[in-house]
Length: 124
Image (cartoon, rainbow, N blue to C red):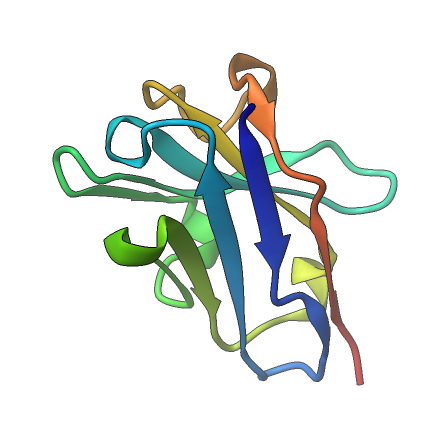
């Protein structure tokens, strides 16, 4: 059974930082791409960042470049999303997503395995 467990969300002031974690189990960690999507109330979900450890590729949407960093800890089968200089528009539920291949950062429907999500709220 595939399990993707997100953690690390919370309330932070604008300009602050959070680190999200995604613990992966039930799939071969080495062979899966891990992607972060988010969805704000009333808006469509959107991809944020992804990592393919097989070739070292990291993917970012333009609106998070320079602020968010994706990384992984092989020993813990965990992927992290370090989010710095957070803005109110980053407020959303963040989902960890897994797939055997990278399917882009725009269509979440291309991804089969999803976590339950973790809430990130950026507000003063």
